[in-house]
Length: 272
Image (cartoon, rainbow, N blue to C red):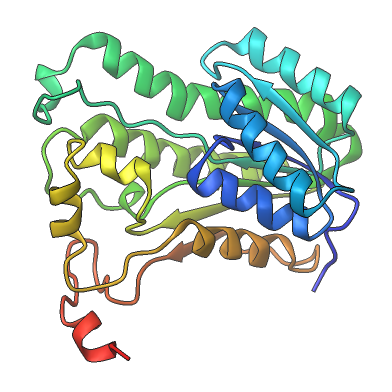
């Protein structure tokens, strides 16, 4: 198991949920952190939590809109100067947008601005961040690990209305990762993909129309993943020896037997 201590990681979408859990897990391993998200206040909250538990870990926060390439590049440049060359990039930031208090709409019913924002965050944002980190840090060193957080739905789309853009984004992330892995040959850079299944986070709540009852119904009878499960998966992928790449890892609830097939007797069978 390779030690991560002393490395520097950049995590996008680090202000809550999976990104925050990954940040806490890496801090525990002695990794310096550069945290990226839109909300400065939420990033500061995460930094304060890390400082309370791991006061020796250096943490920089960089509130940016990843849809803006110049803003992203400036944040990467500043992060490297303040915290250090980036050894690990976790492209975790993702968005799924539904007009508040409205039903999920089919693709042709969506406002163009929502399509643009999802594409801009989920595809362009990943590419802008990766482009900057490679140019400013990893390619010069010929070292590093990039983990792109995709989804099990990046390979197979569930039969739900209103998700065409999001799932196209995740499928594009799979293709981008596969191509980038080939293009970084001649270096020790690893390009890896983590595909979560059903996770109980605020992000999933957005996808069920901001309806807690709908979320409870979707998770009925089984235990979904929690953010810490994905953080543990990231640690596993990062801690493999440099000669080993976990090219893609699906992390799903055991009860999620297929994309839309759930063992809803799981809780009853496994209750203590």
